[in-house]
Length: 471
Image 1 (cartoon, rainbow, N blue to C red):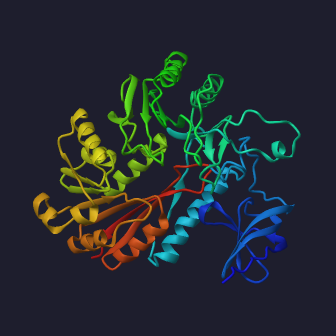
Image 2 (image 1 turned 30 degrees about the vertical axis):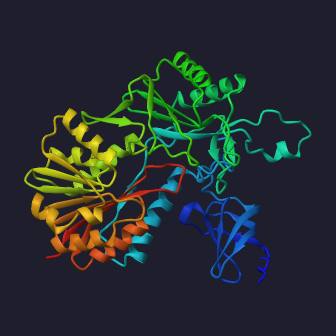
Image 3 (image 1 turned 90 degrees about the vertical axis):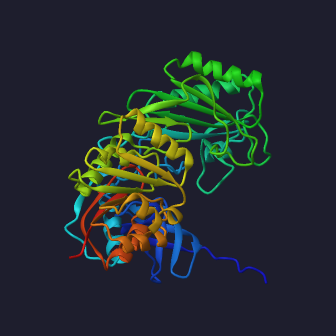
């Protein structure tokens, strides 16, 4: 059966009333459907052109603004509107915080249907630009062209790009001149690597054809001032590889960890690849309250170091440890939270599915002279069993920091089965957090909740909830 062609419609003078999921602005169409607008700010009044129609909503773009919102501010980045990384850069920061807090509250109340205490105001970030400690860029030999370039008469010869994927397009890369998310020398590293590789005719990758040498660039910085650079090559070309790596080493002597990967797979994930150290160490260090955490190329670490510290302090405060408690840290990652709370606990047991992360956790605990932690690897729903608890002890407090999907239902069921006196739930997705809190609601009441803004200029937000056993 032939697919019915969708008719795109326009609406005039819609008032943008809210900000919603994935950073979209929200308006109401005359027919009652919700309209998700990708380039507006709450308070705008705009004409919109729909791009997609569904039973209960439209997707749309604003084509003309009648009134501009008081919540607007001038974006600082030349790439704003094309790059999808900082969707809220046109909204003043206080308003960003307002809508993040509103989303968390709405999800907990509407989806969780739970009773909440007085909600603590969201903790904003002191730095709203240049706060990320990790950035990943992609090479392309056929960069995304701007409208001016497409309409212009100039013949474009330089098609190389080193930057970000255009939203929704796996093979289109926007060349980035200056990104406002990672501190220097991130921009200089990216720009000079691109320029040198172009000048030396080192082939950039073509994702469709699966050809070209240079695939990706990762830059990690740390609060200790160390810098990691990892280049990913599609195949081995010793001469060109060493030419570029030697250039980086000589031009940027402050790089403390210079690494590379040769990855011939169809995708560019490095987690199943060998990382080779070309110069310096194969890791950098992050530091927090005197604790040092070794970060290698595959390590997970919160990407905003300063706000991670604030998030962990809130987590520790919510756990309210006296020194006598056995704490389980579920989805422990590299054990950062586990080690951060260990000095306040009798013992902390961390569980995580990624073997490399657990190895990092063990090594970090050893180097930090922490002797009251143990770490175990495995799928949470399979590891966190009654046998495990019988072996390692009944937890007084559980800290859980699951991925975006939230906790598996079997993990929630096991928590209900053992009923620790307190749970601290850290979440990067308050919708799935609300679902899990609803499942726990019969046995636990929420006594504290605190949102933390880890990612200014974006819609993402973390939320920490404290649950106490009902009496």
